Length: 89
Image (cartoon, rainbow, N blue to C red):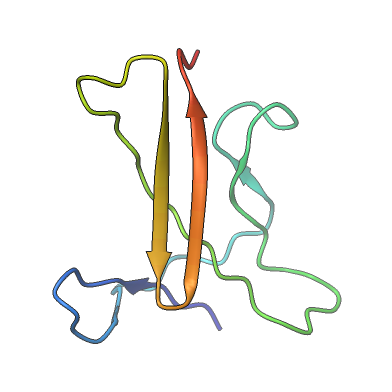
């Protein structure tokens, strides 16, 4: 079973994304395999005792931040802070 949910910005309940995305038979990378991050992992595994939760977001610097900046992703109790180093190639 595979499901994706839209996280609302107004505090409402999560809503399923329809249509349900297709089952992936292999990993999909954001760029060249082995040199970029995994965009979506394969749905087929021998043993998967827990589920994956993938959180994808975008961070943009303000006008005054030209070399480095920090982004935060917060959903419920999850709170992740990432330092971005510029320029990105």
